[in-house]
Length: 261
Image (tube, rainbow, N blue to C red; front, side, top):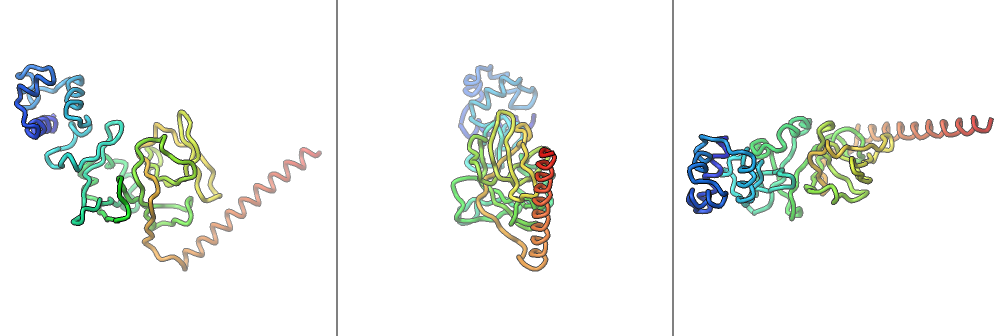
């Protein structure tokens, strides 16, 4: 609990409070509070919740982040005690957009709530993206043409599933798939339905319990030149899509013939 001890001592200092004044606000004796600040005792959950409400800082932050390293006005507090931090800015005051490396799905799953992991990511600034928190994710596979490997999709953080818009594309961070980029269709009590833009793939549902983060498409950055083998690959994809449609049509015709007999 050393991080908590350092944090409550730091926050008390920022508010210019004595131990007695803070203990009174938390309905504790000064001696009991002092043991929490010294790290001699661990506070029970009800006291932790009281501290979180008093300082207006999530339990996640209080227990896991050295707040002295990150000014409060540069910490973004999200729903359900989730945090994204730090909110860094460049010399012009533009919000930096962290870049998740290619082939790093599992790394992001392990580090998405770790401030040191986020802080060490490369970043960029786009002056036309303001009023929100943005992050750049790599795309993989062929389920969302025209985005191929080497493309980064920049997403704006979505706090609530209820804010999803039908037909819009989103980056979904899930426990089982990692980073996936799909078009939102609808939501139910237990899951959301998404669909790839490539007709070769079927729509499917993502359980809400598996969703860690959602980022709405803001723009894309292509790091590889179009043309050459990329066009050949697109032709191959089109061929498979056409073949799939023909197979489905044959199945439909055969089914009608069987019914006719």
